[in-house]
Image: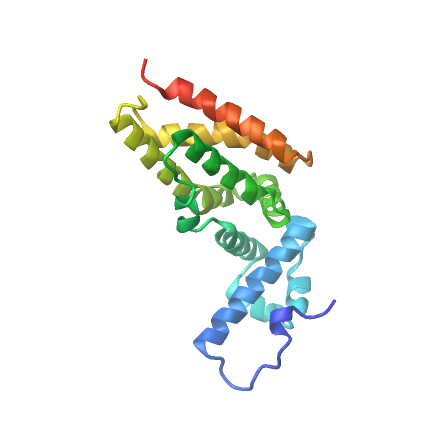
Length: 216
């Protein structure tokens, strides 16, 4: 196996700069994540990761005292890299509430639909029984910003009298479970959904949510 691409360039003798140390740390986590995604937690080894990084096992263990610590850090970095930026979340907002909610749902589904996103979500689902904290990490980093954005929209619409929602944060979480979780489960289970099918499922679920959230 060849060395990690970020480590191919020769390293100058002497103490690395802070920037070089951060880059090397990031490269280690990226390399480790690739191993965990491809092989799973059990089959991935510190030895193989260190060899690909042209590092000694001692160097890796100096940063992460056990494989579990490296796994947690690698999954966290993978989650951070794949989480939508705030401006991307904000860009889903339009003057039409239904269209905005559909755009929010499709953004969440598209993030999971990429090959990298699917692998990461499968890994988190598979290993969350062993590492419950990675599920919470994924929620806090990749989901919570969208929930807060959505809750703000639902609260605004309630203030205008368009909706009747007592707990906007709870409603936002219910929305994601109701509208997004179904298609995501299909994707993660290996069942491909055509874009038209996803659009139909999301549109139907959004309208159902809105019908339940409007004033009576």
